[in-house]
Length: 415
Image 1 (cartoon, rainbow, N blue to C red):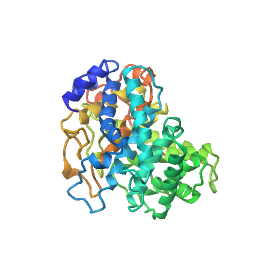
Image 2: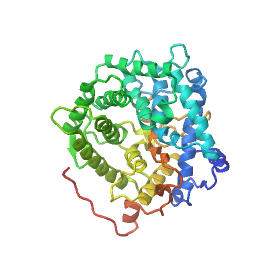
Image 3: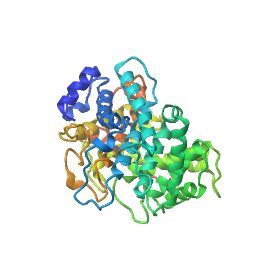
Image 4: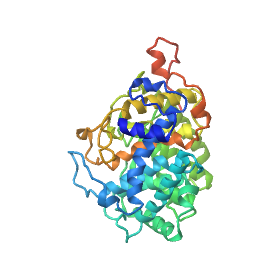
């Protein structure tokens, strides 16, 4: 995060720490939330400002990785918008008031609603690439995940024509074959969202994904991506969050699931997600660094989506107190976003892990893909007065360990 952005944020959000080094992990009260809020603002303002006017595809400067596989670059716009919305939806759902944050929320919420309309309007310059590349199946799931996370703020206010167009585009994605990998959950998320709003859904795409994810469970909180295990952060990017949220819809709508009880599956999935969160928290080093492992490393702090998700939903395990999780997440955010060149001079995300590192991009990576980093900010869906933000900070596991302090031992689980 560049210093000029932090200075701007300090004027907008009193209490923001301007420390951009590891010391920021011991932030003053309110500074941790302010840091994340300014990061949300930096991600959202350029994208929603353009798309709300139908200008994103005209003015968003596309970047692709050096190993780009040749697919049409226009897939980047759906990636950019859908992924951004999945992360900021809970914050947009908070009440609007006359505070600086409330005014920012109102403006970005209005722009988001206008952007949803452009996204599915064939007459708009920002009509997204729904019909041509199976990549649309991936990012449509983040598009609908946002609507699932904030239905009253993002779905209810849309006009009838826009709603009908969204439903038609999502149902139309069934024409794509779903590979036997994490993409099963993208199809399931779309069907779960359709089910949540009472629209016709495909039970096979929904229930089949749940069965397959349970087959792929490797143990101790880790889920494989297909038959082979990958040591990466896809459990955070996709597996745990989407499985839990899909199962919640199945339970809430009392949808049929052959030969099993969805409520029991949901309880199991949540316990496994909580266990995975214990691993994620232990991966954060004393200064906020974490292992740069696996595919899609350029998604940055999206690696901590499960921690942020369960914090927002008040479902963290007892082993992870709120003050400890908040401090650990803040340290990780500062370690990544405190570096230079994460954003272009025009304010858009670059390809990289910490800064501009295009060589780290995968064959499918473009700068629109990078906006999945917003899901690391889900805890902003809790108001500033919530205990997550106000409870005293606690040292996280590695910080205790390397300070020669007492910390809990860790053992594998069998659920």
